[in-house]
Image 1 (cartoon, chains in turn purple, cyan):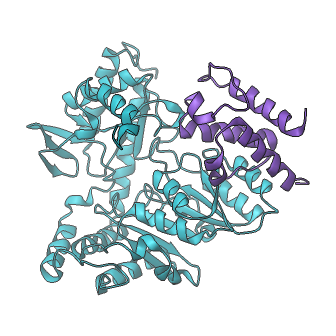
Image 2 (tube, rainbow over the protein chains, first blue to last red):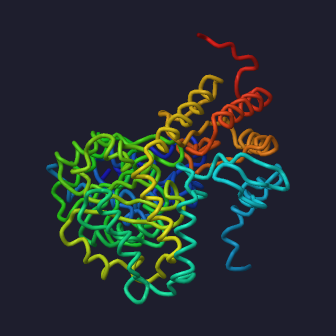
Image 3 (cartoon, chains in turn red, cyan):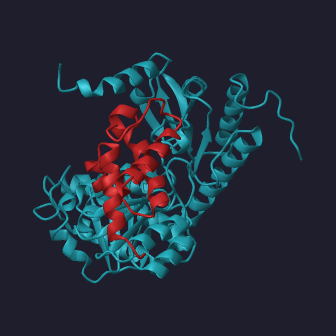
Length: 85
Length: 404
């Protein structure tokens, strides 16, 4: 598994732990639309991921993130920029 | 297919609410008779959800000032602050606000919402970062959206979480602006402002405190939470509203930053909207005088707030973490909350029904806001109405025996 897949796998694991989520989740799952999460639920979910990966995902970045893969991409890039902190 | 189809789910939720009785979103008072009573469908109700903390909406001196101003200066300014909309009275109110807070500058906005919209969207630029409490008011979220700064949320009232987020962005360029509220509007809990100030001192940045619900409520002089906990010097911007303690409408921001006044020609929600009418400016200026001179208002407010908070708590309701003029009780389900709200209205008590996602933890709330104008008898009557409905709906135990 490359770094992106590892991050995506952790995200999927975190999504599966959400009480609202019943369906199976892949890297192509659209987080808000397919999972039926409202914007607040998405923001709160991302907050837990920020702590898990020790990165800061600003709300404007969040607006461009649709799928699990988008989110994994964003976290991977932030980790590259925030190393050594 | 119409352009409004996207709101089908809202329509459905609203419809189910309407089906359960009175519709909370379409309460129309026949007449508001005083700061604490109104006529609704021909019956007298106690107003317990109006944010009218000091009861100044019917203050004789405020009304007299407004009447005099409307006669002398007309009904409206018909223009923006940067065109024809700044009268001597607007400038005088700004001077009075700056003096009240002991600060260099004050800017008056047409609403409290616009004060947050304007300050947040302008002060922080594209290279800057805004860190907001996750439970921030919609005007704070919207101010962030209107601007171009990067925005990060931290966990509600959690200084350690703020510190973690500041640590993560310590190597990022740009200024950091931390935004908290004095008292939060849903549960009435105050920010741990001393601890937030320590985090700010450690990591650097600027601090904005929205004192919308705490101005005129907290502090020996009524300046809010920053005054109460003694950290005013560490707060760079205070935002507030005229629509709660001051009994009218409008907003403001005060600051000691030397260049603060440049915002008058940079801040779009300040520049491109009509200024407040002279009558509002006049009543607010007089209300500020009342806040400065009548400390008894704050004492009565605190007395009423404690009486309601502890009264409901003793009956077994789940109240917020601190006794403040906002007293909310948590209810187990939407259905119970709506039934409870309807029953209160039937018994002559009006307050706010607050529903998820606007509430913390996704529980519905019945939100009261206490006023200095409430009588002790009204507060006691409200507690007994709450208790009797709470028992009949099974929200609290059938028979509460006093423990002491």
